[in-house]
Amino acid sequence: MAKIKQLKKESTKAVDAANDKAFIFPLDSTNFIILGLGVALIILGYIFMAMPDHPDDFLTLTLAPIMLVLSFLVVIPFGLMYRKKTDIK
Image 1 (spheres, helix red, strand yellow):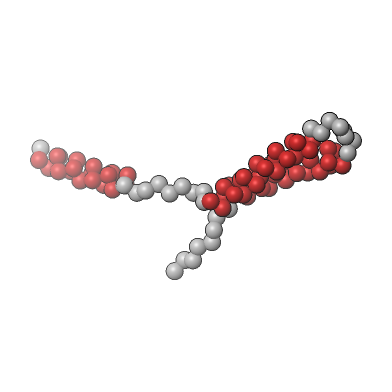
Image 2 (cartoon, one colour; image 1 turned 90 degrees about the horizontal axis):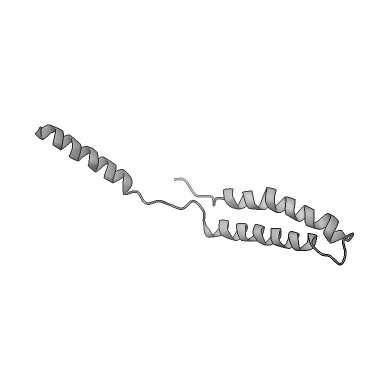
């Protein structure tokens, strides 16, 4: 009986040691800046697309869709996946 209690204490110590590891958030401030830039480009693209005065303008038909596609497919994923280079010694 004493051995079982001792084994349980040792196993809980191992679990506690594993739980003590601090969670490191994978996104850095640089990631949030890039994501903010992507969101700003998306908002600007929708504003350009919604211009009611000039529906056949360059901004509405060409630039706004290009901005939206690049923001959704390039800037936002890059902001999520970007990681600073670290020196491995």
